[in-house]
Image 1 (spheres, rainbow, N blue to C red):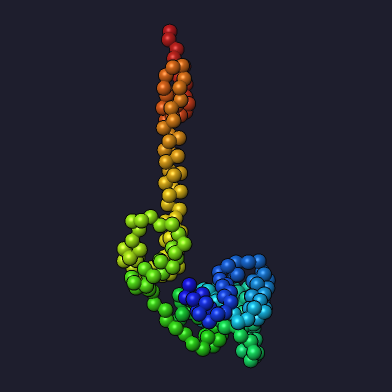
Image 2: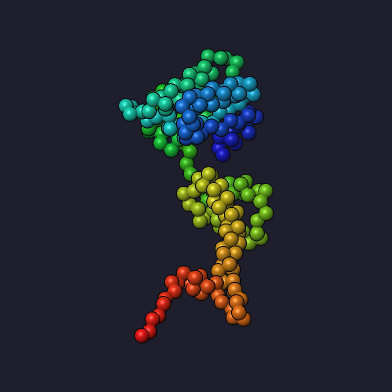
Length: 213
């Protein structure tokens, strides 16, 4: 969200790529995706490329780095370095990671400025919630300030996921009610009312044969 806000303030087009999704593609497809992203960024410049989970490119001094990941990193660095050779190129690369001390040296060299972004405090969490839920139809008793005070340690992404989870809660409640109703359905047979659990139990009970001599 912060990177997108930077792009909005700068009046630049925003391109978001996640290294976890690119690295999960078939061999060779990840490199093609990276090349296509940088090519598109140049065509729609001014633009900002946001590389999320950049630490997925490999940890510092990791001899066990997978060959496919090494090729992916080389392709990213090749296109990244190519931006600096073009004085007229108006493309900026931003990257984010939760493991800054594990970053590969090549990635660190390409990031001349590093900023620590702390988690939002309660007032800022309330502002983030208002932005996320601005177009949603909230109940009148929803107090976003109260929600913000109960979400200490949440990031902007966490708050967004929280909103999505809350939106699906009514659907889950409806499904639970339907399941409860289906379990309580009565089946009428020969004038008697048989509860659904009793019917199921009766069907699963093996018949017994009694012999008398």
